[in-house]
Image (tube, rainbow, N blue to C red):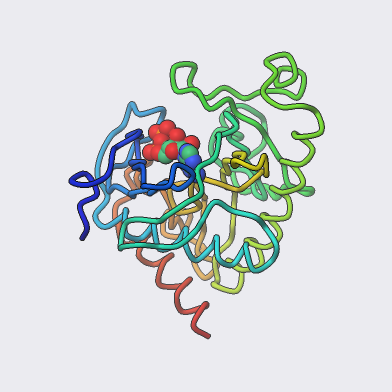
Length: 247
Ligand code: ADP
Ligand code: MG
């Protein structure tokens, strides 16, 4: 494995990834770690080979999205745990799309786990660990001047497109896309790009062929809820995606 820390300047170390500079100021390297956190980093651990799995899953899904006309920050995968990406100014919103109720939606509302949401919910959370990534409203986003109303409409529309494409793709892999989180940013030309990652860290994924409510979970909820076989869940997602792509 290349050790970028020997040659490249580390710009930022987050909870799951490290961002390195390259010779081109508009190009960054994202390094995927095995570190896992949950509940705003109150729970910490490691998931074996997670970095490799998330790097590969993100690369595959972003290529698939690019082919369908969704602009992303991905340039290329450069090693097992590294992708080269276009530098963007991250919009400090986590755009969450929910097809089936789970997680905080069930904790904060009267909606039961597993309830289908039609149409899917598109929600915005403020990307701010100190504040605990709070749920925002359109009016709050406007008051905070995070985006214009027009940019927010673009984010919603892009998130809905990604949802349609990924729901269909995962379904072909016998996986139900329950919900997921996206991050967006603007590149040097001012173009809005899908950034960050899409992986079992950032999606809820249920095995379509499994009805047991614990066994069906293939994502970070295995870690959050101490369900065991966490690394195996991640590997199973990768394996299904790879098999599907090769078909
Ligand atoms: P965090 O703990 O802040 O979530 P991560 O471990 O996810 O951090 O590391 C990735 C960081 O890099 C995130 O803050 C994410 O918003 C940011 N990021 C992702 N893609 C890009 C990009 N193309 N350009 C600049 N920053 C990015
Ligand atoms: Mg992150």
